[in-house]
Image 1: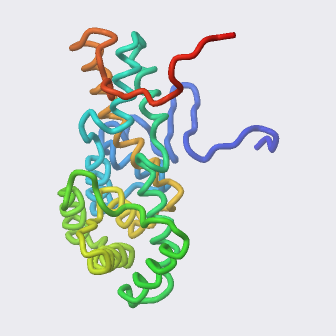
Image 2: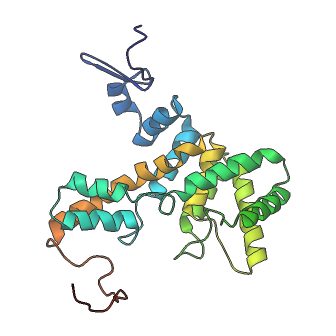
Image 3: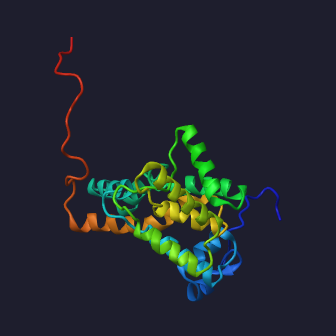
Length: 255
């Protein structure tokens, strides 16, 4: 092997042959689901049945959340400006960051760092929240602008329980939820980002891949939004905030 050649351990390409992590792509096409191949790409091995079911649930859970999130809105705005589908989707993907779609990565990092501190998740949750408060931050993956109880979280944890993925990270997330509720006096539910953070952690995924789960999942929804905008609506329609108030300098002359 030439030591000066660029290296990759993901896919091997030869004339008439494509192998992903050693597996023939044509066999994967016939025998494995999209979720299973995503798992293979991210973990390096094909999932067992339980892992495949859990991965499917994770990818489906964030596929879309209406037209108001930044990624969907940006996708539609770019499409409405007369751009092709790929540009519109790229515009939507670029809005995904720490505030939109990034909570699962930040939450997974925290859960993975703190779940190893012991077995008393209630005590660890109290210590964790005290630390979060001392830094002036807020706990990512909790609370939702619309859902008092995120239905995706409920189902995610049901599936995790069914397939034996309800480990220390989910336990810690639930302990944090309970502590937040009792200390604040209002319900701050685990949202889908927090649920995925806990599940991916109990599945053994590195927290640094957190945004990747959201991007893979949401990209399908963005394709649908871009296509609908291009085929159903006229270009340059009103999107986002159109009723605004100017509060800058008053009229003045150039001298």
